[in-house]
Image (tube, rainbow, N blue to C red; front, side, top):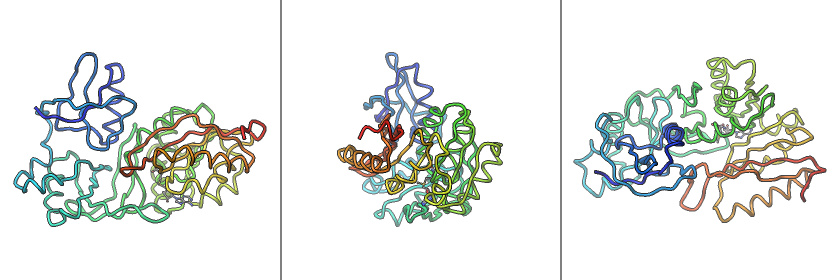
Length: 347
Ligand SMILES: C[S@@+](CC[C@H](N)C(=O)[O-])C[C@H]1O[C@@H](n2cnc3c(N)ncnc32)[C@H](O)[C@@H]1O
């Protein structure tokens, strides 16, 4: 038996939560899930989302039909090195993205080879050298397998082609994307001002009756993939990718949207006026992303509210969700605002 942190989920919610964790690559495959007094115990990888359920350490049997955990293939490493092995990684299509710590740099090819052998469907293992710049592109260095990082990822029944070495894409936002899609009412026009390869737009088009989704992004590579994805998922009549700066697009399309998404967590606050301008004069919904320490979030949102007031709009928080841990102190938050007409302004 192995001890591991587990999400305890009532059986009625278990399948939905298990699928969401699988989509996020957050479930341990090397351990068997098990039932205990009306709950399913789901063994978690580090950094897995809690999704509102309690976490407790539990005992698990190894999953006999699953491949071995990659660390089993590295049993020969000294214990001090094994203790530093990464416990979490992302899988985008056939590309596994991992951060091997500097202290294990001399072992990185060996570690990558073990990940390649132990992880189903993975053909490339790449070192994550960090996300940088305005376009939020992740620098990748292929450590093992196929050098081609162009791939196709499946999420909520949508096919997403992407090259994670030239465009931003994170499978960890899968739960956030379906959550937003389920909020969309029939006939809505949705605008994603920082759409990347259009995963929000595609999931919304597939899982709602939105009339139209505009997917705007500055990165030409991302927009080329977005166009390919629109054709692949047969949603060309409803999803419209465009290569543009969010500010310029917003200035050219005031008052068109029922719902706007700004998923650029480090700087989305700088696009407040642009997001509000895109919404209909009567208001709408704004899905805002930010990276903040929990204790600073209230003050940050109050500042946004004051700026919205100056722009003649009222903001009301209708939901706040932790998307993922960003650093020991900070979290990536998704905040839903109801944006009111000037007359409804709360001040
Ligand atoms: C964190 S990524 C999010 C992408 C997408 N929403 C997703 O979930 O995969 C932020 C995106 O904003 C784009 N971006 C950055 N500055 C921009 C701007 N001024 N106007 C439009 N897009 C911008 C980047 O190219 C990048 O694709």
